[in-house]
Length: 160
Image (tube, rainbow, N blue to C red; front, side):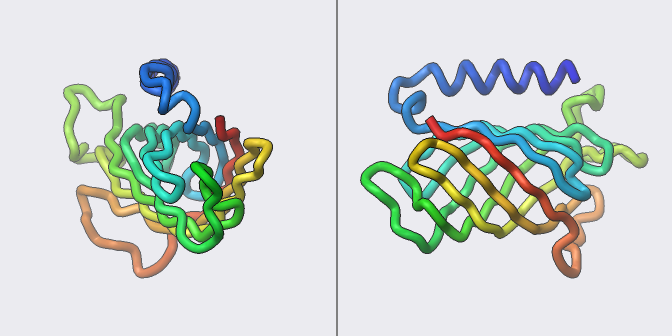
């Protein structure tokens, strides 16, 4: 929990450090399976591309990392992401609770993982965000891509 708080504080610092980022950012939280809970905070680099910090609990392991989202299809307004879009997302994560920090754990604890997904994103003019997506989690220790989607998640948040 302390690591999630640290990630949240870092997110606030990064989002308020630049006036441009502060007006084009978002926060999103959600639940799913096998990803039990997640929090994302990001900035829009363009109306169709965003960069984000990720924190979540996957397979009962806390993971934190950096990711990106591309919003395909749908009309992007002037400086705004599409209201309805097909979303592609990928994140590279590590387990901040491992000491010393490392990519592999050698046990049932997840050391690091790649998360990738595809889904639907709603970005309302009021700022409300809703996402539903499915994808895969590839553990670095095994580095064997799953044969198909192995998680689904729902998220809601706010664009500012």
